[in-house]
Image (cartoon, rainbow, N blue to C red; front, side, top):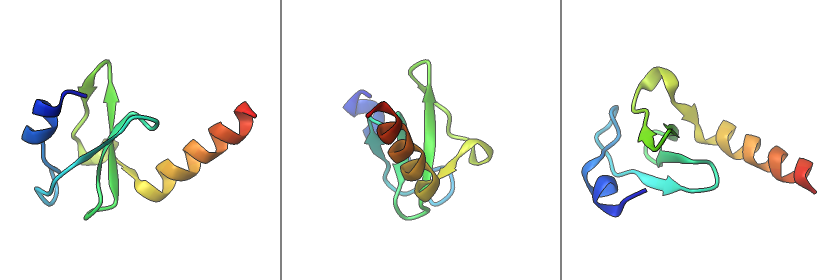
Length: 68
């Protein structure tokens, strides 16, 4: 994710700052506890497509455990 894009994009719900999580391939808003997926290098900033950070982290942990 380009740092210029990250500086411009904000959470569509609270307008807060987003962080890029490479492993989950999503932009996350810590204030809302939501993660927005990135598909084909395009952030999907729709509330209906957002994942809760708790769900995103548990999915990533299960993928990591399966790879071992």
